[in-house]
Amino acid sequence: MSVKSWLLADLEVPSAKDAQEQPETQSPWWQVMCLTGVDYFSTLGYQPGIAFLAAGFLSPVATLVLVIVTLFAALPVYRRVCQRSPYGQGSVAMLQKLFPEWGGKLFVLMLLGFATTDFVITMTLSAADGAAHLIGNPMVPRWVDHQVIVTLLILAALSAIFLKGFKEAIGIATFLVVCYLALNAVVVSVCFLHIFHQPELLLHWKNGLICLHENPWKMLAVSVLLFPRLALGLSGFETGVAVMPLIRADNTEQRIRNARYLLLSAALIMSLFLMATSIASTVLIPTRDFGPGGAANGRAMAFLAHQYLGNAFGTAYDISTILILGFAGASAMAGLLNLIPRYLPRFGMAPEWARASRPLVLVFMGIATVVTLSFRADVDAQGGAYATGVLVLITSASIAVLLSVWQKPALRVAFLLITGIFIYTTIVNMVERPEGLKISSLFIGGILAVSLLSRAVRAVELRITEISLDEESTRILAEDSDQVIRLIARGPEKGDAIELLDKADAQTRRFHNLDPDECLIFFEVIRGDASDFSETLCVQGRRVGRHSILSAKSPVIANSIAGMLVYLERSTGQTPHVYFRWTEASPVTNLFRFLFLGEGDTAPLTQEVLRRAIRDPKHRPVVHVS
Image 1: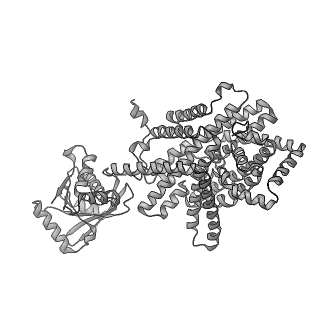
Image 2: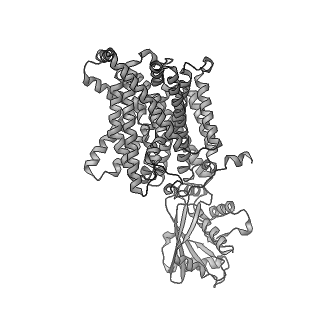
């Protein structure tokens, strides 16, 4: 097998129905929650440390604000997203429906930039934190102490798994999540028991709080202001919606209900562990150990596991953490491989190879390598970029939900407040930690550039995936005795005036020396959403006087005519003909009208589409121009 064949082995052409097709394997909602949890729950590996670096002794109070936002803002938003997006399309698809034509496509491309930031940083951050747990283990030899190299090796191993072929294994995810949460529960229980027996630890924390902040209201106000820095703890909701097709259900209503159970359970479990780990780490770990190079930097709970339960248990905790972080990276890679082919190739905004997973794995591996080197595999430094991707997706979801309930005054007020919270949080995070916006801007710029270039290059592909004829159009075509179908291309804006049809029929016969008895059929294409790339062409027939007219609606006129001709050649076994009139517009104007409006000088464009679609001239439909 050649390298090209191996890379493109799983090349698939997604259809418009793919979003609603059910996967072959479905599982109970609690097992699917574990698949989401490898991303969501794995943040416990670094969230306590990031929270302390952001808020210091206020970390538990700031984490409480995070928990409140999780349960009373993010959770209600995504319960609504589940209802509106039962097949896992998420808030991106909800917003796409609200913006017409090119506006919707450009909006989706920008959201894809932020989503790519989220998934790529999930990969690099998880790999970096896995490397930190490995290097920080006291039983690991010192020669392994190379954070960047170990992180790149973990990313390389992740990419190798996907290049070989990887399918999401819910069973493995369930095992990893159960083990990881059980180990965390043991560590937290031991830590709280230690605090119970040494109450002076709590007194020391309380004195530190009072020294920095005089009263509880000031503590709460500062915690609210610090909340955007802790937004990593909101990372699991978009993934929770994306895995909805994997949930076992008898119908859509049951799937929505089970997805809501999934989100609620994950949010409650995560909230409990966020509070517990934040209190334990803040009270028990010395401040100096949280900083860069500190023993607890990026691995607070592992530090506590080693200190209070010994190196054997601590090593088991490290192994569990590294595995779940690695699987979180795998989940992020799988998310990218599902997300990009779902939109860009369907928009005509990616090369054909973007439908195959292996070339995309190599691309994302290259991007992840650059990001890792740029941040020097620093867990804390990547937190801002990760939070930006997470917050933009949650904010877009809250906006989508707000618009969907706008006609209900009570819900409008509630979701307006929630949307305001997330907009504020996103803006503050971008201002304080602009690296996330910079990375997202690079992704957005790259996606826009590749998308527009690809759209221009692929503009003359056939693009019509299927032809559907109604009964009248089938009868009209069957009436042609020799089955050499001759179509007259005609603009639908000219109307059905018989005198105009008579004139066009007569001119075509005169210019092309056609016999008066030759059957001619008018074919008109009504331009639809020009930003769409391919679709099924639904053809309807009608009669006006002695004339027969076939009519269809499509995003591109030339490609639709070519698609119809190809269909006629294959269905009749005869070479069809089409007759055009030259347009008077300039070539440059026609080019831009074709790329962005689906119109232009239709005759030469139809010929070019046919030339590319049918290599053998003997079987290629004939284009006539006068």
